[in-house]
Image (cartoon, rainbow, N blue to C red; front, side):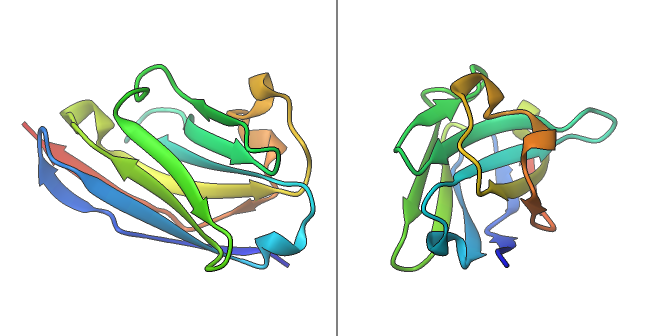
Length: 127
């Protein structure tokens, strides 16, 4: 059973950086998988930010492309989200999600495709 625990959130000024970590215990037992970062701002729907899968496909939301980088350390069972050039619009609760299924690229940011979710970590970017 995969369990996800996010960490690394905090408060930063616009232009700053944060690195989120997702401890994804057990995920490397799955031969096939997709892992994604989602975020949810207050009063808004949850949206996909970045995703990767066991075939090393990577996808980013247009709003973060060029600023955020997703990566994994399989030996440590960690998934990272490096966030640079942060802007106030990035303020949200950030969640890590996992599925043992292979997804098409257009499915990467569909919340219902993911089976396991973490509890989230808050990111606040001030002007």
